Image (cartoon, rainbow, N blue to C red; front, side, top):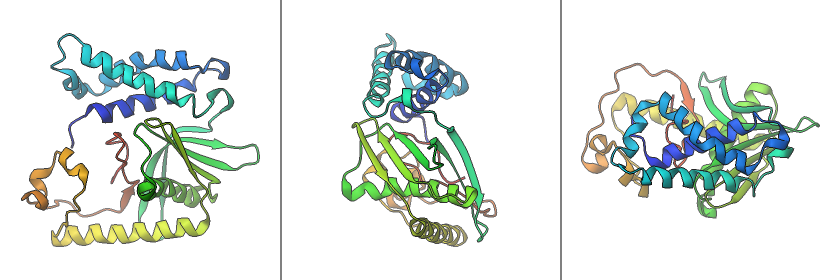
Length: 257
């Protein structure tokens, strides 16, 4: 398990604030109210995850924590320039979804928000506390959203009308309208990924795929790219698979189950 990081924890905190804001009546969903939720949600998060105390263990005068909380408040406030929560009534928030494909592969994940229009059209929304990727890297984030759309389609027999990524770090909103063939392609890709994982587990041949994020990884001692050796997988493989994680600082929210 990776150690908690300020960026990852800030993402979790911002998600919690945006989720809780919808507990209030529409007219009271204001930026000042959202900012006021930050300290309380931080206390709640820290209580549920005591290991987070180490994030600011060396912050004797509290300046680092104060700056970190202010940055979280800025991300929360930026959301109000991108969406109007007084006009939104989500059907679901932090929705856990799970479905089993005909192949036997179980897919599961957590969707930040689900909106349903009066006409029945479904919109899946995901908050990102990082910046929007450049166009040549946008497909990775969209793959996560298509994963969610696939699960909803298989589970509810409805293709979501829109997938929406809200990037609080840069103030961008990226949308995509999927069709059935998109979701079939995602399903085929997931099956291929699972077969690759199963093969690597059986053979012990784990091929590293270095990226610029490797420098942040806590598992370099197990990675062949850094001269490490992956430990043997001690259990038989089951068939659950989670939505691919993102690189926006929300580690641990979703991933292989």
